[in-house]
Length: 201
Image 1: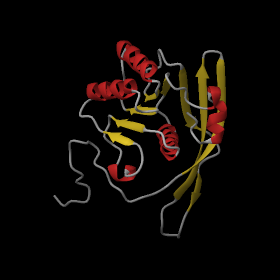
Image 2: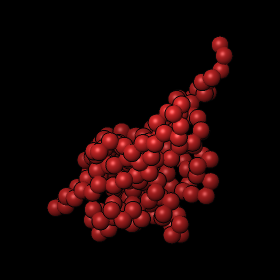
Image 3: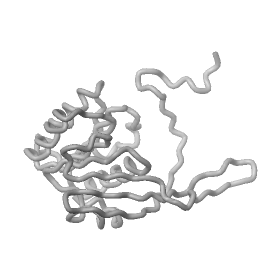
Image 4: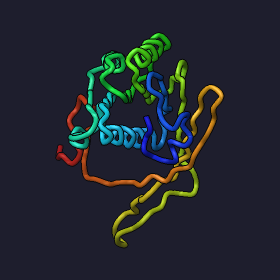
């Protein structure tokens, strides 16, 4: 499953995420953005993709014609969704964001990916049993900034990120420049609470 990001594909074994395998990306700068780019690229190529948003922080409006967005009520439900979608064989690429599974749950995820032939990627710090481990971190120089006017705040235009990929007998890294987009979409900090910023007491 190529990501469509050339510099990233070059450091992945076989040029992309392997179907039938479990991959883990440690939470860090650029992780979700690069996986979303990979998910949208897979959809554009005619593949079925699911993104499981366990933290419920993804705005549904951003996903109208993209991957299936699943927003479970709990971490346990998110793990079950990842297993079921991975095992179903109906999805080529499944991303599970916002869970910290224990070893038995990772075993089930790895087995589900293998049974369904799915490239299953977890954004988590739990890395055992993953055939591929990725991490990303900010890389100097400082972010490129711009200021539309003297009274406006600085706007970050791009960030440099170093991505490292590790697998059995494999270690590679790449430096990527990620553009930064800005919007006015406001989400509440907790998915169970309304956004009350700007509301008078």
